[in-house]
Image (cartoon, rainbow, N blue to C red; front, side, top):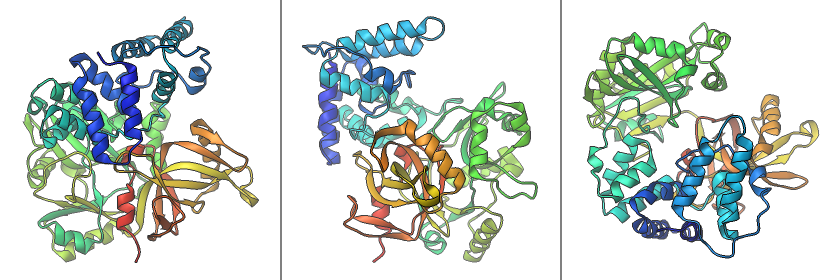
Length: 504
């Protein structure tokens, strides 16, 4: 029987090393000790994502719990999991008192280290380095299963704790298949050096528009349509126009991957923020005022046939059958001249650039290799905002200069790589000043420190060596383009990517 102290010790050990192999060894060791019932909650605890999701209890409530630490460690993983389940279920009239009683019981039985761990876990501040990639490696090692099989099962199930439970109890990972109305973790593209370079690497290939929209995944059966974001959050009720369009497609069952965006009357893309504003609203007037248009670029299932393991060439053929005119603009197996012409048209139409994709590639979640490459005329990175400074001059009273960090691919804390206030409009300054305090973890008279939860897209001219920041590099001429509410910090660019961009 695993105790919460066992989890706290493993978490501290993982957080105390920068070595990915050491992290994997520590996690694999504690996973091997877990019973079948403990595996899912244990994985949730160690990755900072309880299986219950957000339980609706804030930091102020938790730190206000006034309980002396327990003299001995008695809490088990199962007891904590049960308490979190009860907290998540408790809503409605009288729930405040019930939730307080549940928290009193839980924290009253916790030692000092356990209390600190629980507060970090429940407020989303647990950052000891057990990211999904590290945990997947640990699951594979503990289960003595091929890492490719674990990754594929996770892609199709969308749930790391559930995947770990199957792997560690001797279940058949291959039996986890694509299931309609259960979202698949998306395949992502890596930055490419240039169109010419990508065409050389990926032959034969397809080249298509890279839209400045929001990623969507669509599932269709005869009686149901569901639509998900790149983070697998369901948004079906917010996008009725997309649901109606999908229902009318000439297919019975389908799983489609694509982008959606709001466009102007002359067909040009509206701001990314305008598109994202629709994902949280079901107001009829907003739907009518800002219609979304879908552009599909992949087909993972069509009319009873799973295509996820088929090459992209086959999936594109199925896609054209399924969605017709709603295929994203592109060309298959183009000449260099045709590819350059498409890239020029994409930019002329107001889009970001093009995607170049290997026609022999199968669908694999995340950025695994260079099978998909994004080519944009301006270097952009998705970085994590870890702090901000109060402005001066006309920016007095506003949180302005951003502290930017790259993701550590081995699961450590974000690595600071620079600062910038360039590109911040008055609208963004107001938004930052209103929003940042909700993510504040510390502050002084000139700056605040933020929990690493906000992702911002930064344009830059490259990177250069610098002893000023912990990563040993700095951004060159960085400027803010936009915030990315559709991305989590685990999807930010890594310090490895930034180092690969170093200017000699």
